[in-house]
Image (cartoon, rainbow, N blue to C red):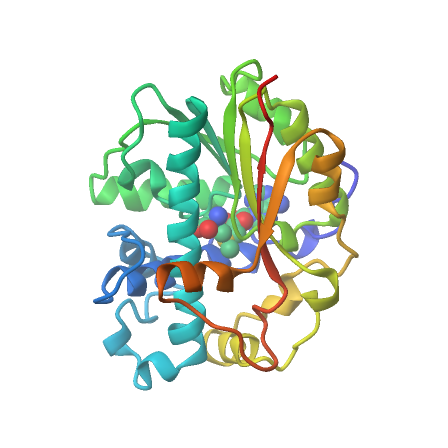
Length: 302
Ligand SMILES: C[S@@+](CC[C@H](N)C(=O)[O-])C[C@H]1O[C@@H](n2cnc3c(N)ncnc32)[C@H](O)[C@@H]1O
């Protein structure tokens, strides 16, 4: 991969840079887990938060947040991550059951614990791609709580701006078998060339019957809403400047690229799922979530 522009400023693990965003999602999942009307359960999430010096003081229950749901970060933004987790849990399991695939790849897996918490069909193999430092931290924390994966799990430490497809294949991935791919909370951090490569590689490695879900931000929204409460509260409360971590390059139209290659695609706002589940974030003014789109794609069998 040609574009390595972000590398100099990157931290390899979860202690800073884009890796710390994995802890942010983990804290949100911990809070979601203990809500009375929880959308998704992740009992491992709080262990990551507690184990990392960067996040050890963050809340893992809503009652630890003085203003509770009114807090833009630990209320609305955390609920967004809870909803996203639930929707993508459902996507993975539904796709496996409907399409018969038994291979799953999580790109930018971070502290996703789906391998440990979902009911996988027999014979599944789940590959997790993220950078070495993030996967090493995950291994350490899950080892300390004796977590046992509920399917075959293969960590693939590699940088998604490099030739990750080669690393995946070397790890045992079979391009002749259908695959369910998940790219959750990743693409806006990558240079646009890395997104184009990623979508091209997913296409090239996907046998008929494969499915893909990913999250993007609309180009026009990516760097707007700079003073959205979600961004400002994340910055003020945690010192994480998400806008600074996002790639500033124009984004490729990956859904169109997949359509050109014969995939069927559907594009949703998160609010579509808030309505479906009866809980989750709703649109508001100056909304950092307004341009988020969840894209679902499938490569039909002949
Ligand atoms: C917001 S977190 C999301 C993690 C996970 N998908 C989830 O939803 O829990 C973003 C993840 O992308 C990973 N990431 C960002 N840039 C990456 C790169 N160039 N190569 C590999 N992983 C990357 C980070 O390390 C981090 O774990």
